[in-house]
Each structure stands twice: as C-alpha cells, then as structure tokens.
Image 1 (tube, one colour):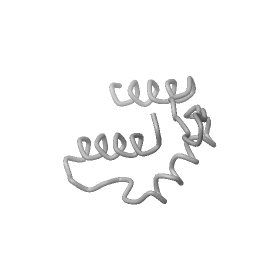
Image 2 (image 1 turned 45 degrees about the vertical axis):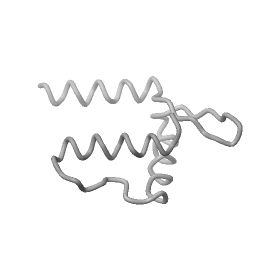
Image 3 (image 1 turned 60 degrees about the horizontal axis):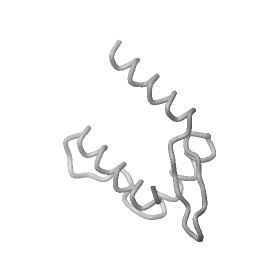
Length: 74
C-alpha cells in the first residue's frame, strides 16, 4: 500500500481503539517520520514502483503484532 493509505488506516484503527475522532497522524510530516521509523526498525518492507514507495508488513512486523496480541490476551 502507499503511504497515504497507510496513514489513513493507522488513523482509522486509532480512532476505533480510542473511540474518539482524534487522529494519531495529524500531518504528512508526522506520517513521513513514522513511516521512516517503521522502515528503520525493519517492521515494514518498502519497494519502489516508479516514484511511489509501497509499504508491506515484514515478517518481523508480523511477529511483533502476534506477540502484542498474545500479551493482550494473557
């Protein structure tokens, strides 16, 4: 998915979890910073298609999500 869609999905998930209308990522700058942190941590794989960068959850990202979900259920 592209970065804009990633930002929209993050904001939707945040709003559902917090039951509020507040956005976690309020600006393009904040989205750029968070995407770079995810990439730097190895939680997403980035591929380039022309000038666009596409983001996909990495295997490590999958493992982190599964771990967090298992801790919440414990």
